[in-house]
Length: 76
Image 1 (cartoon, rainbow, N blue to C red):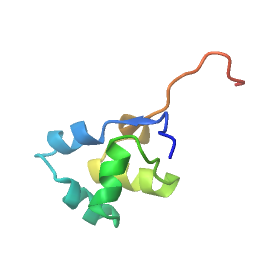
Image 2: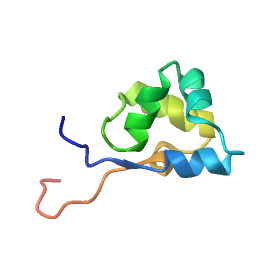
Image 3: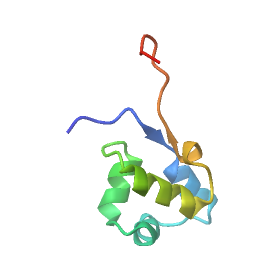
């Protein structure tokens, strides 16, 4: 599986929210802990719906959770 270029701040957000566990986040968005681990490590990109659910759990905008690097030479 090819790693994603999307980065995220899930780990930092979990710790900023009283050290929420991966299991607690997984429960709140309806996935397994292994899915949360894979997303945090950049091995898996969540669906758009799941990304919004994660942002909602932390009460932050989507782009505070996920970032996609600006790439030179891409068509705008």
